[in-house]
Length: 406
Image 1: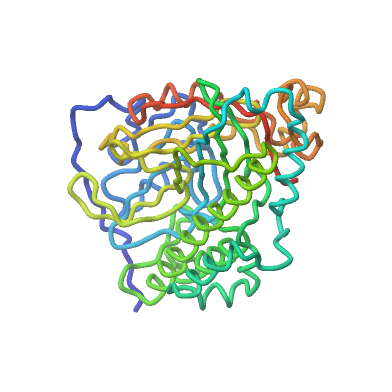
Image 2 (image 1 turned 60 degrees about the vertical axis):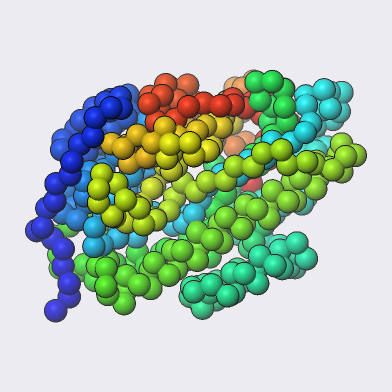
């Protein structure tokens, strides 16, 4: 008989000393989002109702409807994991590098040429990978081959070594930005690419099969019970894909730095580096309980921990430090959060308006990016205001180069 965790609700403690959430929806669901659509709320309530969720789900300021679980949700589970709560882009996240350069070093230069250099150095768009394994990626591939989960990756996507150092599409991007003192930053957003997608899809399907016949509030909340072979196989694949995602971003950072060095004629010095996942699961302790913590569209924001919160195309992004808010499960938003679906954005916004919003930025200048229009997302300023108790803003970045896959 299969292990089941339905019917064993838990409770959690509350901590004082930090700002209250924007809304306590119920004892199992706390929200820091001042903008929260009814459908998003209902989806989060279904997730929070799962009996092994302990102590509560925390909704971040950028929360919006997602596939599997709410994007911008932090989900602590005891004795089980929900594969769809992480989703198919396992380990998606951000990397940033502050360089020694300043705005004056870019002045008078054709930044569209730098855009083209970066676009040639990093494969862009869904399904586009490297044609050969670059020397710079070889050590990273060797590391991944030695990790538990490599055999699963080989079975899911045998070409995964060629995926390392590729961007993807959608809201993934590479940017060159300036901060509030005109220092130059390299900034990028990507995840575990096709191999992570296939691994996640496989284990989501396994969870759904194992939960066949159970009354779940949503099929996407199918779970795997700790101590079972299916649970162990998923966690193995998850940890492998999270490491792949981190190394994928590191490989792209190397390539972008190389192109900036060539463009400016001086090697990039990495004055500061920040890296963080925002789609992942980790073993953590919160409010006195050790749990599996899944952040789907949220970053870890422990006290003193550096993090990255990107805006949408043409808007600001932020380098932050966590405040360690216990009720928020030491988490913070991962970005602006969508306000309109991709289809709706294409119907609502025009290329002329996107051109206006991207004035002064070297970008891809294509209708393919209409669904990434800034107004397709929540206002990042509102998200950051809601997050004031969760993180402290250290740097505000504005794009001068934006590279995306179509």
